[in-house]
Image (cartoon, rainbow, N blue to C red; front, top):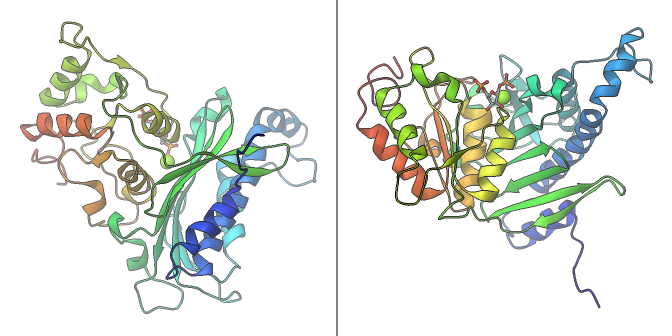
Length: 346
Ligand code: AHM
Ligand code: MG
């Protein structure tokens, strides 16, 4: 008899909570509500090509509503799945300039949600994987409906973090600080089913590095030299190969599953890189560390960074511990752009 148990994400969250009596139901509900929002977004992402065709005939969808851009849709879905539940005091989104207190008409709770509703949305039109990223903190301010300081906590204070990958299948991956677990959406029953328990980043890793090499000429000599070393076919173990999708959740997910090194460094034109500390780097860093890997801005552990403002950008290096340590050592000597380089942070 097959003794494989089917575990839904809701059951998994409840069981995690049981193991932690100090955890309260509210926190589990936040994660379950996010899973629901992910299913709604996933359905719409799968329809993206068709929505576009239907949208051309008057820009209305089948319900007679105006067709929204998918990133606006995802923002709306997450806000509306979470605003009325009484578990959150405020939210902040990559898509919205200011932090968003829960409206007065709803009860407020103790948790704070930071999210990037649909990362990599420029990839939608060409059917490339995209994702949602989230991070949950406990409220620290005295303000009932939160304050900016609630959204500006360092990453090591995260209670939970995760992402949803809308790929060849939809996956939700999350951590509450007790390992990293992955769930695959079975669209026929509409449930996320535990498919990847206790994910560990392979180390020694697969021989991949991942970076947008089109920016090579803008990098510091140290960064250029490090990438040249990685792909050098004459190195003892042979050169590394390159994988870069240009969709952060997909690139991070591959790195988590296969190991290797993902990099979005600072450069001459963008000394702080492109990715955002609060919505992208911190949640992914929490996951990567929980899976046994490392995440750094090239010098400092991402989770130790004190955020300056809601939309702060940060260079990001994440992946197998050994590979992130190597790149930190290489960049530590640098005198150009990036952390410790004089230009970074000015
Ligand atoms: P977006 O916020 O406009 O969606 O951009 C974020 C995306 C990430 O998914 C990805 O890692 C990065 O931009 C790729 O940037 P680039 O095209 O500079 O390599
Ligand atoms: Mg983004």
